Length: 253
Ligand code: PEP
Image (cartoon, rainbow, N blue to C red; front, side, top):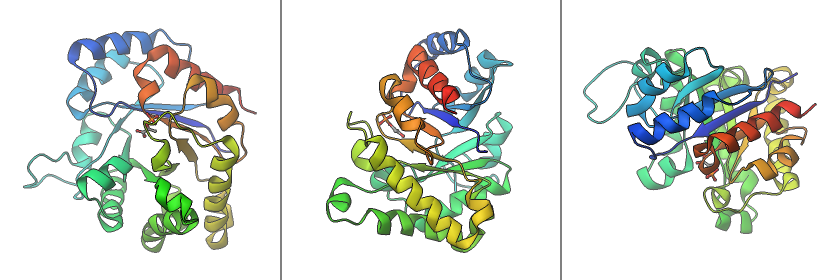
């Protein structure tokens, strides 16, 4: 049985003050016990989050990391080892904003995945198609390619050390959500592809959905058989909304 996971991606939002308020709101939530919970704040504020969260079940994630595990001459980057040192347990790799705005290729994403694993971080591999690719019926091919590079290097067992986030690009930050059926279709396709290689490991991989998840659509999405929770952007900046999404994940049988 897979545990659901709900992750909040704060992107490049927040100030020390607004993050203090958000953390107070998070600390006032009733968290479901059976859900893995995490937030990915801007790197600058990880320490602030760590101190405020204390014994909270909410874990920390980086939003990206360098492609090299340990320190080095990479101005502006944060290494997976530094994220780990700061208290992170997870890191996002291959978010569509990193792929489209910062030119991260599948090979770069794979190097980051490897560097994260080498430091004991669980990488959350983001995959997903654009609207144009969906319209051209290329979803399976695009998502398959994004997974393939990781599978060739690490196999399904290596992928299972991380998490897969299916995030259709057309649904990120747009208010457009994939319907539960549309999302389930891709999640099932991903799991079937993994199962062809290693069925036992494929059943262990947490595959979460991201793309305009809110409290109002979370239950319907999370009740689909291959959707193991969510990666939440905008709605994670509101503590009550994020709490409600987490509880929705906790209520799924
Ligand atoms: C994201 O940034 O990963 C995301 C899913 O954003 P949103 O929930 O705002 O669509």
